Length: 184
Image: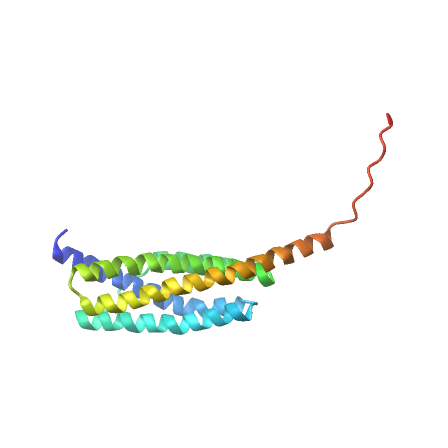
């Protein structure tokens, strides 16, 4: 691949990530509001602030490239955000809703980890050393967020299962005694 073609791809993907991050800035407050766990809500709120920082870092990279960050719609993030909205529209409650929100959030994190890993590698190949540093910092933050979500899920998933089992016990009628067979 030619150096200029790689740079064109790099800039195109940076625009894609920029749009993804701006979509996430709008989606995270909704996820925080839908959370019932204070710890999960707080995690979404702090990730919102972190995401705003990711947008600022990308803007720094675009300034250094003398390029505009706009002009691309990230269809991948659009789909992930739509799935998250569909989850919030479900009638899940309590810990089950929180477990569903974590699932949606981790899909977003994995998408971002893949995207930032690629553009960081391309920046390195292109000799964009300042961008490499900024992208690496964001990549590490995305990985940390994913790890925090995993840790939260270990607790919340157990609580969701317990709440589900309690609900099943309340719904089930007393077991009936089996009628004796006429042959017995």
